Length: 121
Image (cartoon, rainbow, N blue to C red; front, side, top):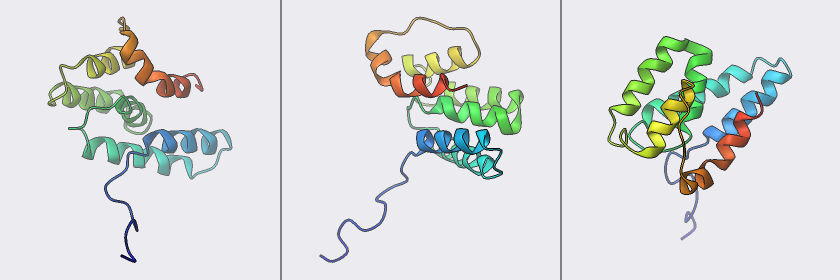
């Protein structure tokens, strides 16, 4: 078929790429930076049902654009989601609000890229 593979098959999670673009544009004082935070927020809110370490970036973007209260509200929505009781989600919330807890080695492997992004700031 001629059209096989054309287009995106689903709503791809580009929050890591978007955060890196935000970071670069922000360092350049380019007004495009905010656009990428908004994309991160939109994706995070519309995909809250999906378990992902990238929700950390959603929390961070919400805090930057909408303030701490909005990020607290989003964190409560994460905790009330179907994955709210998982180690990953609990770790995201605890570490975002600086109540760091231990993380097991398997989770640590999944978190490496997010951790590198966090070291940028």
